[in-house]
Image 1 (cartoon, rainbow, N blue to C red):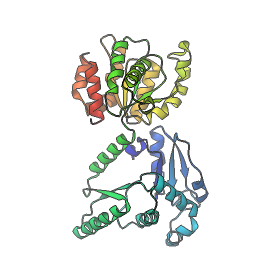
Image 2: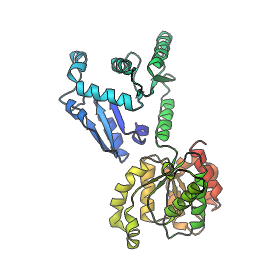
Image 3: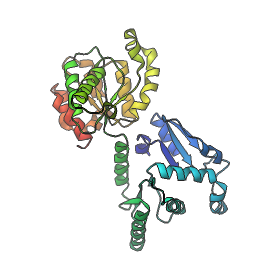
Image 4: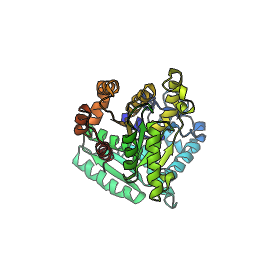
Length: 358
């Protein structure tokens, strides 16, 4: 559930009655809205909130679907929910997790997809299934999987009991959901302007990379300006390569590193850090450190950049075991160079490419 909570997926349909999804989403720092009554399915969430649609209600719902007759009469008594499900099946790609090919819930959804097949707007949908232990069951499931492809539902089977494989798949889905995106942070008071400018120019050359610009004055602004210059000189549509977000610190020089703005910064940074794969972090103060902590909580990979003079920031980075262990999964060499103050722009860009699986 952690991978799904840390993804940028905005809509979750579930037949579960418990509160595990809500707890995981809340722990990741994201806001959410729950739809667990028939009338709730009329409404939509803002783009910043995860929408959890409990089609069978939940443990506190008066509209819970739990008895045999509830299931039999579901299509009659829950037309609003069914209509919303049909609309989402037409406008989104679904990933089904935790069901078997015998599951009555899946049969209901497949029947819904069949009825929608005549629409040219039907998206591809995906499903992750556990391979049955029984040989005969496995054969039947494979036949069912083949049949599902006719309806635009593509199934991946993971080995029976191999939940690490399932976790790995979901982690990859979470990562892909955030796109090929990078956000750069750091104080305008540090001495890495030349490196930041080169990073901006080199990031442009990574295919389809989207730069998330946090409207900051220093390092982020330098990176963005040089990225934009490369877009212009290469006749590339800037709107397709850059996304801009607000920053409370940008309004007044005297506000830098002020505690009273950290709450506003955290709220403004939620959206950007829930939808980015990589945070490149130059040395900075309280705001930069807050962004690093928020990024790590959301599964964002942090690439620190520092030099010999940045002793306090270096100490902060290497004390953060979560950050170091996460980065180690992608580049031990980068960590070694970081320790020796030997990181070059080429090392930063190579690290970005490895994380993006270029």
